[in-house]
Length: 186
Image (tube, rainbow, N blue to C red; front, side, top):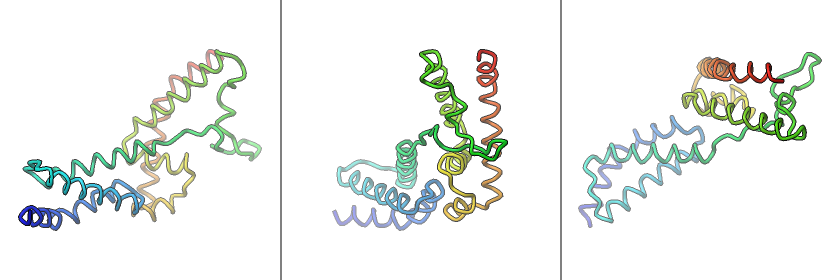
């Protein structure tokens, strides 16, 4: 048992800082990153206690950490709110996404079209590379400023702006066909 504890301590000392940096690059919230790090360490201890043979401890730690990060992101998958303002109208009033969708009260065809549009938007957001998706969701859906995002992630505002720009370009391209189809059938 003492030998196992010694090997665990050595592995954590060797990989701990790199693993912590890896997790913090993936997860903006420091408390979430710390929780994931602790979960990975606990899982290593449990696996070792259960006599699991882990040949490459470093690779194993990073694989478990990546899986925990993915689990967290899936759990916090953004919900698209149709009541959020998305832009200002020509009169300066906030335009609401809900106003651009067919009303569910207009019958089954409108409800179906509405669901198709929401599903396509959600799917298009999911297709974005992780960094672009995080910036787009944080800014457009969660309403965070680029300054707040830069402070939380340590990424420059210009880099965040670039990531959002690429996200918007992808979404425009991806949703153009459904937009055009929707307009021709409206």
